[in-house]
Length: 412
Ligand code: SAH
Image (cartoon, rainbow, N blue to C red; front, side, top):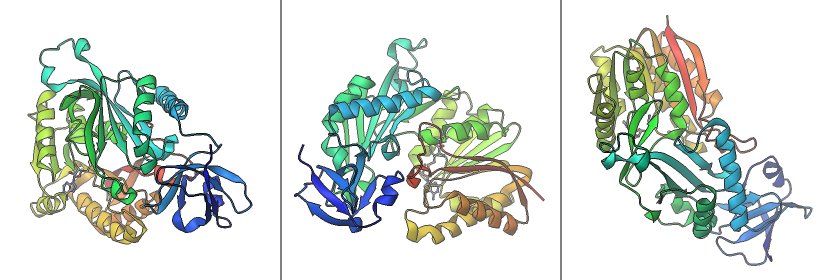
C-alpha cells in the first residue's frame, strides 16, 4: 500500500521508540504524499528508519497515532488479531463470559482512540422474572471512539468484534468531549442487536443497574472495581461517607461488608437515584442514604455540624486535565483531602482517588502529606493502588497510568 511518509525532526523518535504512540504536529519535519484524515501513514525518524505506521488526522494536535511498529495495513486482520490479544490478556485475570470488564483500553491495547467495555448481565426489566437468570443473560458491548482513524474504521471494528467477542448487542457511546479535538461529532447509537436501556450486572456479589445509553461514560466505572473491594475490607462497623459516589459502587460495597451506615453524595440526581435503587436491589436500603449535592459544599456542611465518619471515600472527577492545570488541581485535591481528614474519627480510614494522569503518584503523595500535616493528623499508608487490570499500564505511555487510590489510616 502506498502510504504517505511523515519524517520526524531529529530526536523526536526517541519517545515513540520508548513506547509512546502519538506524533504531535510540531514534531514533524516533512510530509511526503498528501495524506487525508484517517489515512494510514508511515512514521520515519530523521535518518529515514521506520518507527511505525499510524493513523493521520490533520485536524488534531495529535497528528498521527501509531497502531503498529511494523508496517501493516489497519485492516480486518489487524483488528481481529489486536482484539484477540486484548481478550487473552483479560482472560488471565477475569472470566469475560461472566464478568463485566474493559476489553479495549485504547492506546494501551494498541488500538489508539478505541475503548470497548463489556457488560455481562440481564436486562433490568426482566430481572424479576428471571430468577434463574441464565436464559435472559447476555453480554453487551459499549464502544467509545475517540480518534478519527478509529471512527473511519468503525464498521471494520464492529465486524472484528463480532468475530472475536460476540455480544447480544452493541452500543456506541462516542459522546466524550475530547472528540471535538479530533473534529468528530458526538454519537450515541445502537449499532447492532438489542440494547435494553438498563442492564443488571454483578460486582463483588452485588447487583447494579448499568444504563448503557444514558449513564455517565460507558455506564459504569470499571477501573475502580478492585479498589471498591479493597475499600470494603475496612468498612465493618464504620460510618461511611462515599463522596462522588456515582451509582454507589464504593458505598454499597462497604454496606455489604458490614458498614454501620453509608452516606453517599453525588452532584448528579440520576446517579443518586441509582444509588437508592441499587441499595434496594441488594437489600441494603436500611443502611444507605444518598444525597444529591455538590460534594465540596456538602463536606463543609458536615464539618460545620461536627459529623464524624470511620471511613471516607473521595473519588472526584479529574481536576487536572492538562499540564497547565496541575497547580490548581493540587490546591483542589489538597483542600478536599484536608476536609475529609477533618471528618475522620481517630483511627478512621481515608480512601482517596485521583483519575488524572497529569497529577502523578509523586504529586498525589506530596499533596496527601500536606493535607495530613495541615489537618494535625498523621497517615499510615495502608495501600497504594491503581486501576484494575483490565485497564493495562504500559511503559513509555504515561497516559495509561492514570488512576491513584490510596487507602490510609488517620492517627494523631
Ligand atoms: N465513585 C464512583 C465513580 C465516581 S465518578 C464509582 O465507584 O463508580 C465521579 C462522580 O463525581 C460522577 O458521578 C459525577 O457526577 C460526580 N461529581 C462531579 N462533580 C461533582 C461535585 N462537585 N459534587 C459531587 N459530585 C460530583
